[in-house]
Length: 386
Image (cartoon, rainbow, N blue to C red; front, side, top):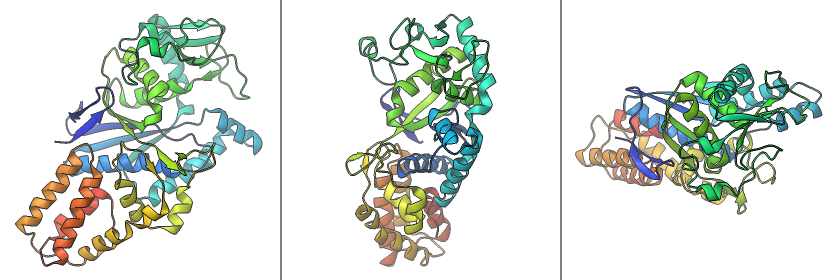
């Protein structure tokens, strides 16, 4: 059985979905105003590996990715280009989809623009206000986190630590750490009418609406980068708990480590990004996969072309082995395949799995046998083309 590290419990847990043989996975997707960089790609490659492992166990996956098009960066780019925010979002969504395809990521079932869910956000904010857990202050709507059970649990913060944060600063807030749900006081040149006033549905509620309207009161995995633990995922969980009337509406919170470049976090603002569209022109997508999987998904990694190229001999060895498959698989090799599957079943330990794969390939080069079905199974799980 697959075990996943749950950020909520800080422990590895057996993955048992709410519905038998169906895993519902929500991934915090990109803000669609620019291209996809390697830090983003690592996230989606990780959940592609997770989906492939679950599929190998006979489980179906429903992977939902939200696309953030209600965002200042999107609005600003639209203004700069004298176009609409929807045109900007459509262009970069197409580029994002092309990058996923180039990397062999086939697990994403649905892409959802948050702008299509504004009426749902309004409905959910109203529900939170009716429950007495949200309030208006000087035109904005906030979530009163003092009324949220276990708030701070997912980011492992005490109430005292949370009180040090100054989120969404504005007059009339009850608590400094209260989360904005709807912003009616800032001018973004784009806005939506609501019963709260003309404004913008805020970031955390956008994701909540997409997940809630597609998956209902519960789903199995919430994924994204580790940097989203606070405040984004903390706020999302609080909102979801209150809307679903459940303390645990999500089975597992699975977070991916950061990608650095030159010792600093890869980000557009720092200008140290490695674009997927450029990387895929220089290197085989399978090589990129092996490179990403050579680090455990929870660990940070510093991008290095030298380290990327260091995986080329393994890729060549795998492809050579693919030409030497047999009609049967030796018992020794079957045991090693079991080790490969066990490694991935232990919180997607891909570095250990790749080490086993290399040993299998070397054994085959030395005369051992693996049949086509078994070898294809290994490569399919990793997403490697033979």
